[in-house]
Image: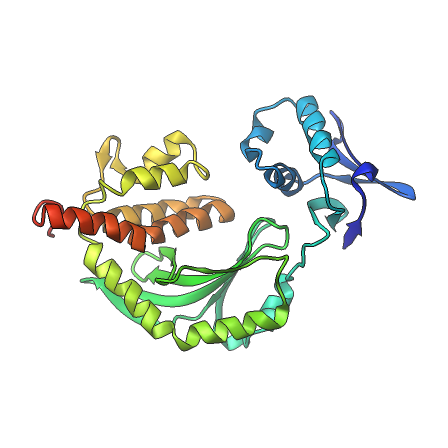
Length: 308
């Protein structure tokens, strides 16, 4: 359930016995244990790095949380789950509940559902089979990402699933993934948007497959710096090296190898980290990556393709 409030009625306190507790003074005092999602949402609201919650002393975090709450301009809404403070959002936030999203579509259309406090994924059954690299068959489908806790917009993108290893990644069409922010969302529009995407899905998926087939066997050396930079928001420095190398200080030879390494190792991450890494894996075959590789191919037509 939701508790609408005012910033001056909210306070976070910390004690060694109770941990972080949110106090809400709406006529009477109510107290709720603070979940990690609440703390990270409050920090991300002001673009404060969420990794700080693991680095600062609790009393320092208590001061920081209360300072951030005091700066909230719109009236905040506290989302409570199991009598814990799950997240804090703006009064303009229009939630799309995961259960409502499920009910929009026939159960026969859906294949897989995954969720945690940060993200919810509704994946449709595969629509087409392709073989972007010889001997490596993949199923192409559609996935909707939602976040009831305010960590992402409703995003609709394509999912590529490799059959032999069960790895997967998220890809955008040439026009990019479609995102609908929770301040602008209307439930009735989601099913219409999905239906429109599905009507043109074959063309989009063929285009993604063509990109993968064209660039899979090229060296990833020139797109690796951008990938590593983007991974910094998700992984530690040591994790980035592990995820982007075949072995210690041994780089992957092809974009396809790197793609497979990212999606295989991402399985061990938390769901929200996994989605972020799998999305960056899909971006290896984006228009921006293609422009870099095309530019190199023009200059050195025989120097950057690895034949297997």
